[in-house]
Image (cartoon, rainbow, N blue to C red; front, side):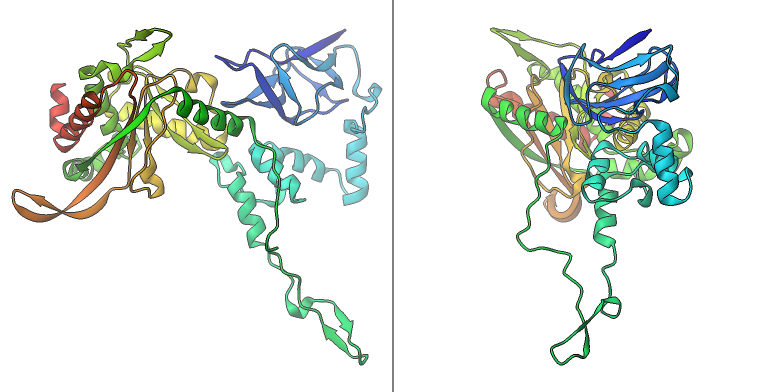
Length: 420
């Protein structure tokens, strides 16, 4: 009996995906629950598991094909045997592949090792490696669980040693004497490379343009003296880490301060729906994370009910999942307000772009010691510029400035957050 493998529901507003990587091949036997294929969507990568056991007798959609929810992408025959299934469309079955590997490499195990190593690489890393003629098994991974990332592949390529002049093949000069040929340069000036955009990158590009076109975005700035937050972090650093296993971060303070300010200025936690304003009295705070294939914004649900430790642990978990490519659609769904921290990359100031349909985003930046005037005296303090981008269609300038002042007051006097 033949059963079709179909593209499952991919989550809120996601209707299509790209076949990123087939984990199984035609002619290979699978059990219920085995991962068959990895789909790349505009938000996350989704693994599709086998719902039936049997042999994959046909792969309908090849890698890099765009598919939609409900599309059949493969067939599994519960009555077939692996040896009975011929290779189709030039893809060898499992036995043929092992035979080829054995004849070329002297043993079968290398093929299995390469397949295993591919599973330990992100889809983008695989594409970059394949485009450069590299085997993933050659490259050490720096991601969670040793997963190979795009950065690992690019570092491997840049660090490959070029042949030394002593190793260059000898050629005869015009007088018949051998001469050493200098190695060819590995960098080509003016070279170009065309790489197909990932689903996520295309979506980011589209949404950024939509945000610019569909909202009246303005940004207001302020600066915050981080002295007291830094003192608290230093004072409780060891105790916090011993108790919770993580460091007390900066972002958790801003999550708490932002929620207090949102309660005071609720339009920044609202959205526009047609001709109506939708006020939200829950606080699902998105925290932007720079992932390998583009920015992702996982959401802290009901963040107003979370402790500092719970916020920091959730952010650490999101960061780990982003590095390993295991963020889920549920992690990214919704969100009422976003915080983005360009300071981790060294940014001193920026104007963050809204994450529609949200109408506010708070941008954090690098903490830098600067001379400032305190009580009439010049003092050196750890200072941070902060930026609030807002949709001027529903948020007035007065509200935005007062929101940012409220955040500033709470961060400069964090004990006041206990009263909020």
